[in-house]
Length: 196
Image (cartoon, rainbow, N blue to C red; front, side, top):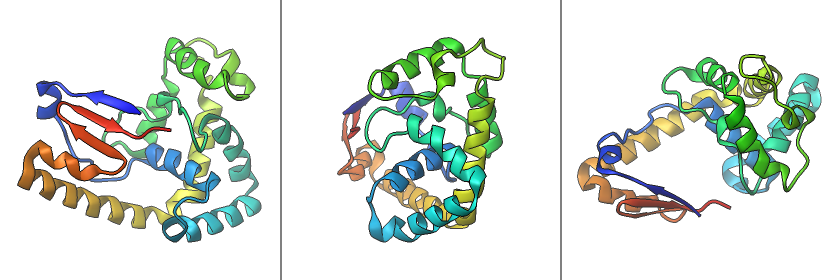
């Protein structure tokens, strides 16, 4: 379980994202591609994506390192979802490419203990040496092939959810975070999220 402790400063600065974040959508989609979860919500996308992967060699090659870094269950390195707001995929990939070596090493150590990782992860170079350029390229190819065709739908779904969450918080304050159940529970000042 992931436990996020909020200070009063944190609570004053909570914002509701109004647009989908490409890297978060990518992470979630890789997990959904690997599992059978959500057959009604994701079945058509999963089938169409598998078809695209067989026809698009670049996207198929892009998925290989992503599967190693993004398991269907378990720890996913945080550097894959840098905190950028409003900059879309280019800003996210730029932030990812600038991940410091110390952080890379720290975040790749944990998954390396339980599964084989791509060879570049075992000896990342110095910051600024473009170690993450191939990974960023794989992420971009995946988004272009498997998510961009569905981006209008994603934008609508996130916008609708943001409207719902905004109204809920306006009507009920931070206690409205209770409405995030079942995967998340609000026990002020701690948000607990189921995290396999």
